[in-house]
Length: 549
Image: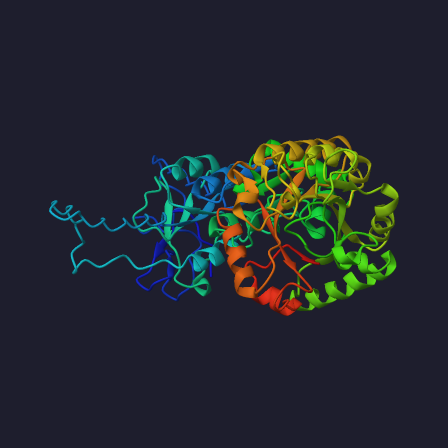
């Protein structure tokens, strides 16, 4: 097919077909030049005394010119985000594809009127004889845009100004009712096989010196087509952090230029820049990447060194504990193909006590020497560590500060266990379930986030154990704004599986945004304890952290 030129393209009567207006001689061959109105060739000499008309300038090709990304940029996933992305990526686009604007959300049905009051006026329904416009398959438009290497937009009031900036003169339109000014409008083909040929296209863009991190693999067609036209392969990071996985971290480290963040999870340009700097500068975690979640799942043994009664982790020496957790990891990995599953130790570092002790806090503090062998064994075997605090009458922050040197290690996180926090003078362990106020938790979170920032550490897990809503007062005020920590609510109820599922449903209800979930399997108290396969299949969503006690 000949190349499409401006002002020479007409749509045929066949859907998706195109006709080119050309002049032919009687024998079917093209003449040497276009014919004039009087039948003479415009290339012939003009009659003496007449003025020859100036030849019409050859139209510019419908090329696409990719612009170097000027700085780190964050855009949304809507029509406005597509236009912002176009401004960031393209200097020129002589041709574009346009989809219709999204249909408005349906109006909800009116609520029933109270008895005795007049019914609200019913909305006017369209005439049953009126035919709705045919639905447009956005995947066809996306394929057309990708095959041509051009941007794709949704029709919007702001679109014409962007087409002016791009110098667009050919619009392949699926939006029948949209106006595009003084531009050639071509009906979008019904199938990619009917794709027209456009001079200068398809464009094969040079490899981009930029990267796009996107919060979902399912991108709107406009965003997908823009990135393709610019030669950028997107990297999925659901949390909006470039350091989410080993692959995304590698992409961030290889990038010498600015980056794109596509989606609300990236917040803004300053946040994206800070996350990129963290990704490039801090130590990676077991399994790759620098953020604990959601790029991996952790399978943990819980307990205290040398105390089998407190959990599986204390039932054997460090080396044997490593092998035990590795076996569990292998079982989970078999049921979570394609995911990164790693081992973890959750070490009870301060232990709730029935006696007040010399400090009156009803909590026993472990020495560094007691927990270090397990931390060092974990570090040598790509196992994460969480230090669990049961503070009694002490505060969580007071106890966390005691273990600051251990928390400066890159793979050591923190867990707060409100069950063992005594808020009132008369409270005692085992008489009632403890609780903690949200301000005390937020205080620990800010301290730990500062520790991470000031020591150039990867973000840390900050676990909150909870199996009753009352255990964390005003949980809805949890401050999750600091990138240096990732909160996880660990649901550690025990007993029959029906009761455990009820606890799981209650605790995950109204979970603050950005908080991850953990589940505990009790070897002796659960009736029965779930197998790894049952844990994956029956606990929804699949927990980010599963511990065994």
